[in-house]
Amino acid sequence: MSIDLHTYLTRIGRPGDPQPTLDVLRSVHRAHIEGIPFENLDPVLGGAPSLALPDLEAKLVHGARGGYCYEHNTLLAAALRAIGFRVTLLTARVLVGAREGEIRPRTHMLMLTDVPGQPVPYVTDAGFGSIGSLLEPIPLTAGVELHDAPRRHRLVHEPHEGPLELWKLQTYLVAQGEWEDQYAFTVEPFEAPDYEVINWHIATNPRSPFARGVYVQRTTRDTHLSLTGRRFTETAPDGSLTERELADGTEVLKVLRDEFGIRLPDGTRLPEE
Image (cartoon, rainbow, N blue to C red; front, side, top):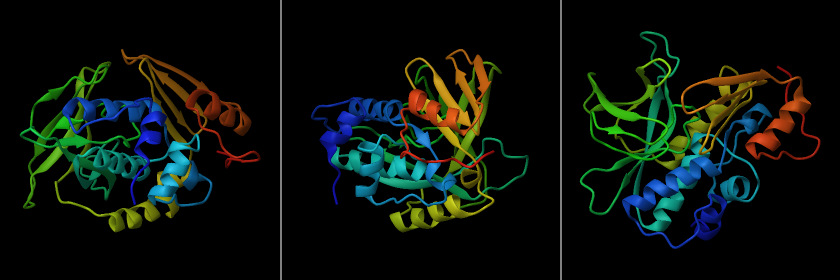
């Protein structure tokens, strides 16, 4: 089943007839992130989101909603393939917030995109709900910095005992003046049924953070917005923060609509924190 590419491109604000070039990959990637918010509202409301392409189009393209990594990157992968890119789906272990020595499961979806004429594929990821997420794809090359303004990223190798090279994505924290690990991955391909299993676990396991509380992100050209529970945060490009605590569920729904462009059905009630 193929994506309605024209409608998708219109949704992210990048209409046209794109070709499989590096400039197109970069522009579509950034436009997707700036055009569709990250959110986990389906699991919070008690369900696992569908990863079927028609359902993703209905929700993220037509439905004034966002999604989390499996939704974003399944949709983006379909769009990139429709443009003419070759895409390999991967998974990663999230490292942000991990304790020393903690080994987390591979629960994050990302991909590699082959670009005609380029010597290496590009790590492509529109679904990492964090201020440390990629705004543009980064070449799979160790030590090369990507200045995807206002952010900076690099890939490094991590020694380990496995047969495949282990890569880590890092972002530069301006306020702290240091690099922070985001996630680690190998280039072993994954398929759609793998993400169905991971998606169900993340959405329904009562110990999953995505099943327990609201987590919403939106990146614009000028700022990064975050809603964690009732805490609404705006982060400027220099790393400075503006935070406030929302009063109740009614204000949360208003902020979702006004700041994130997310419209839930009338009568929706989010669980109280």
